[in-house]
Length: 118
Image (tube, rainbow, N blue to C red):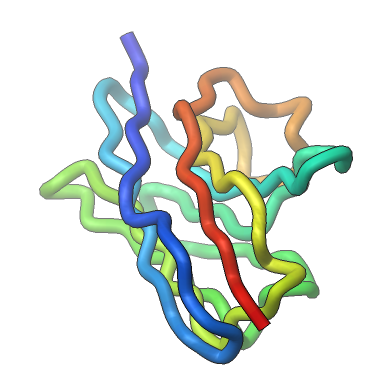
């Protein structure tokens, strides 16, 4: 049974950095990170396959970096130069293909809160 558990959220000032981690159990070929701000749709940020190939949303390309350690079943999202508009719940997700479209998610983590103050 696939399961995902996030950690690493917290509060930071604008311009700062945070690292989110997602520990996966079960076979999950594609793992992505999504965010959801209050009152808004959940949106995809980055996805990585078992092969290490990545794909990013334009909004985070160059600021966020996704990586994967298959030996530890862990996917990490390194977030740099954070902005107040990055404040949201961040979710790790299992995807059936390499995409940022949430309709292809088959398992969600419980989420971790990120707050960026100005």
